[in-house]
Length: 239
Image (cartoon, rainbow, N blue to C red):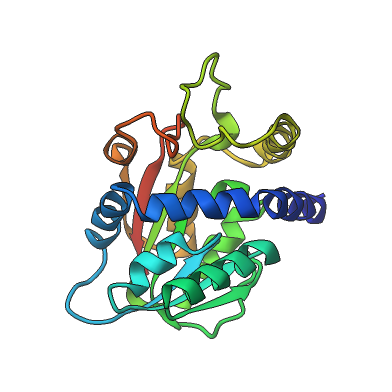
């Protein structure tokens, strides 16, 4: 069943890769870039370049923000089409990022390889989140930081009405049905978030776990083409 879910995910994101890439380029060129930088760098150690893993990098939005500040960044994603787009954008923008096709639940890096792990809108898609958090903890150096920006997408209510501009405005009916089917498959495997994440992170060995449910209000102040109607949260934790 879980292999089938990942096949569904790859198929869905392969179809979305070109339009998703274009949206992330626009986001990088917009005011949202500054807002995301403020959220990211508020948590990361300052004064030295960090070795950072961007898990579920998509087309590289977080990776580019981090690389532009001098950090050594590796970005992984399950979907080859996303990594192809990320490499194309890296070449066009002259960013130095190591992008790899890799399953986020089974990262193949040596223990304590990274100072920080970051991820955005990924963890809701993972059928083995408990195991993923344990493996991610092993990737961090002692005292390293994990930042997770996500939402309880499997329990979001389908809005009766969306504004004219929103993040899914270019997604057709067929893909939206596929998106809802993925949520239906994942929902029985999850508990309400982010409370469940805190339990899993503690079990994985993380400490100093903090949850911020107000990040959504700071990032999505306007109902524009990037607008996400599902409130996102930030979880920060240390190894």
